[in-house]
Each structure stands twice: as C-alpha cells, then as structure tokens.
Image 1 (cartoon, helix red, strand yellow):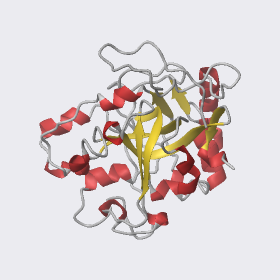
Image 2 (cartoon, rainbow, N blue to C red):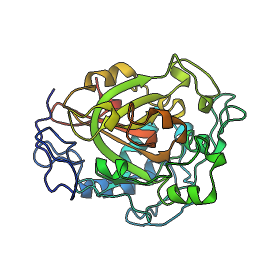
Image 3 (cartoon, rainbow, N blue to C red):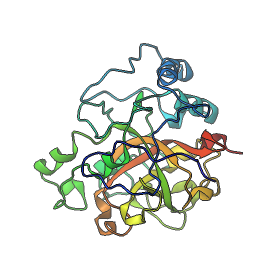
Length: 306
C-alpha cells in the first residue's frame, strides 16, 4: 500500500533530511486531492448546520483563549458526529505551519462523564491533566502543522509527572500551546490498544469500550518509535465512531501509507519514563477527533473504510 507521494521539499533549517519518505503535506494536489482550502472553509460554514447550533463561525479568527464550544461529541449520534467532524475547517491544509503559534484558539475543556467515571477520572488522580484527556467538546477549527512542529515544542523537562505539583513558572511554559486544535500527518510505527490495561484517567476500567489507543506516529517513514509523537483515541470519543476498531488501523502500522489525525494538543507529564523508548516528546494529540488514512490514492476517513 504505497501512497506514491514524494517527500516534501523546503526542509526547515537544521531539520534532518534523508532519502526516506517524509510525512507528506496534509493535502494532496492533483486528481487525488480530496480536501482543499476552499473546501475546508466552506465546510466550516456547514458545521453549525450539522450540529444544530447558530451560525456565525469565522474560520480565520484567532484568539488566545476561548469559551467552551457548545458542540459535544458525546451528545451526538454517530452519523451526526461524523458529519460534524468532517465539517470542521482545517487552516493550512495545503501549507502546514512550521511551528505551533501561541495565538491560536484554546477552547476551555468541557467536563464530560462516561458512566460513573467523571471528568477527572479516579479519585486522587491528576485532575487538570485528566480534564483535558477526557474532554469531548468539538473544536471549531484545526491548524495544520508539520510533524516537527510538535517534536520541537518546548516543555519544562525538570517538572514532576503530576501537573498539580508544578510551579507556576512550569505551567507557563505549556499554557500558550496546550488545548489548541491541531492536524498532523505521519506514519504509524506502533498501535497499542489499552484494553488489557487500566489508567486513572478512565477510573481504572478495562476493556476496549473503556480504554484508549496509544498510537506512535513518526514524521518520516523508516523512523523508529523513539522519534514518535503519541496520539490517542479515548473511550468517550471512539464509542461514537462505530468503525474505529483496532483491526481497521492495523494494516497501516509500519507501512508507507500516511495517516492524518486531528484533535487537541495536550501535554501528558506522566510518561517521562517513556522518553527515548516509546516517544520523543510528552506533547500529544489527545483526544483525537478525526482519523484519516491514505487509501486507494486518496484520503479516507477511518469512519468510511470498508
């Protein structure tokens, strides 16, 4: 399954280059192009209609902070949610940003609930981190970035594995970026559904319906897992995507077919012990709201795979 796409040119100064395949630009040009900028902006105008909320969305508006959106993925039926996901505009889809900007909107996370498991997960857990992991609110716009924009993003390396023990200065390092809605393209080197494990985020529950997938994404085909950014589905989102099953994504693991994910930028301090083995950074896209794969010469949503 080759996407047949050439490595993108114009590498950033100091960025490693090689003859291996890079994560392609987020949108393809030519006959196989399925998502254009104009189409994305048009789709943004349809989002309020898909959700049944008032119009007036400005896809180019930028702000440092924003109130919670009124669109809750957990409150929508699968067909409505999938339509709403596809209608969200993605700025820079043809020209990904080389860095994450502080000025992009950061909607406040909603407080979701899954059964008896509240927004903070287990008692005694890192509530502020889990609030962000368990959010189900839909963004109104994504910003498309190059893969290196995530691996290069700063964070306080001396900070504790629990953010509730961080100093105010440490929190200030991640605050300008966390919670921004991001789209990025890469290659899957590992897919780890957590059905047989448990995490405080999900109140210690097990099973596919109550756990995340840990997906290791790299920016260049052939890179190994220590170079990865981890992106995660969550049970509060994936239960509303009936076609999101591990077996649908497994054929793309270790293959030169790229994958594109859209979701919220989150800093997960708990996994410092995984650095250099399972990931390059503690920045994640978590939760993921949309997954696309390069399939049959075009971008296809995981929701639509046969």
